[in-house]
Image (tube, rainbow, N blue to C red; front, side, top):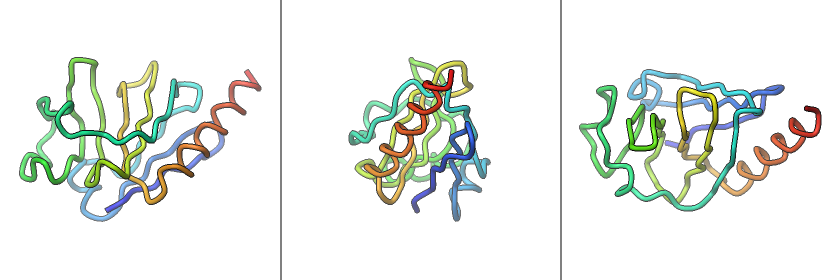
Length: 125
């Protein structure tokens, strides 16, 4: 199940759909664009993210679904991932999460849209 990422004013909003919003105990995550450090559409592997999960949800489906908060060596991360090759990774500063890894339909266009919004936000600052 893919999720959506959209620009809403000066914010980046991630919306979960279907069962994922129950598994993650979140429906949306909103972060200010000024806190986005970088965006990547590179394939995300399962192995580097095998750290303990903070909330219950997807321990039931290891290697198949990763949804929710995970504590890693680098800090807290949020995953909404069923297919690692369809994910966008958003690195953050001054937020609860160090990274948000989110599965979307078209990762290249989402990455481009987020980068354009970041660029506009930085030009205004």
